[in-house]
Image (cartoon, rainbow, N blue to C red; front, side):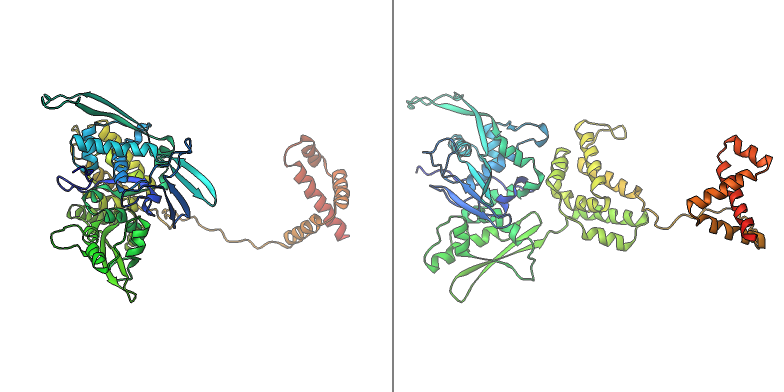
Length: 496
């Protein structure tokens, strides 16, 4: 048989491989379920953007490459998983064997050439993004593939007439536009590559790219997220069986076949929990798929760390209401946090829940600085207590716990300081002259400037020698003294 090998076989299941991807890939069926022969137009309901995948070439008008499918999606995710975001470059350096294992945990000559063909497609297929009638960006995923062919290392069979070679991969270069998208945190979401690799049905693979994001707000026991089987097949460019019997076989499978749509999607892990899937038949005889996302259960390893963090948060002086309020604001770790923690060697599948709690208790700024310092300590092999760091996961959690223990709440009421009581003096009753003086001062200040100047001149003429010497000194209080004399003069005039 000359059929191409499928990218769905696995040597053994793996867990916890989350890879960043453009968020529109997780909101709409941009990747088809089956091999395409022409381009596709996809609308993203959440952002209102239109994606034109394949069917055009910006420099060659007579070239019409086919659209991308889920096989290309796995190759793209495998390349992103091997990319170092903190290196500052856009070249992925890995061997062909490492890339094939990361893509589907398989290797071999024929399989390597099949992977290389998909990689070559990613250099030729362009994607145009349009929003409100304006072209936002036109890009391709890969820009160049660095490969070389070398003579085969094993002894050739004498019956082989043609020349046999080995395919060696030196690296892959992302396009500049796609790298810009990967570095923009607002345009990214994470997807479980390990789950996609364990799904065998192509329709289930295509659905897993965007159904979990749509069903993430629908929990078991409530209203499910609904989508018709015909609508799903139309969105991912999958041929819907015409007969009801074959549609049921597509959903439930049959004896001797282990692949089915419901069986491959039900119970799969997502970023926020576990995807649950079922179906029913409506009055018109159409099959409706029902999806829920059950909240993720806390692992046993993280439960103890979360209990210590909550206890430390309350011991430093916070209240139960403050703890409950911060836990309500708890959210998943961003791709920025995942990149730092993965570089620090943290096992996120075990400590993710504890780190999410630490983030909401510590605050965004303190959590970012703490994990950045931990990453620097691990990568530069700083000795902690005279010993190297052997458990990065425990080290990061202990640092977060230490910060929570030292972060005491700010006092809302002013701190009272004990001082000696100062004896209060009894208020003196103002005399009649003082009352008359204050009254005259108030009246004098309400006069116009011309009248004030007249009284000032009279006061200056009638000032005695002591007052005149004070005025001649030019000190700061001379003007106030002259005004006081003018007020006395005003008071004398009013007495007359």
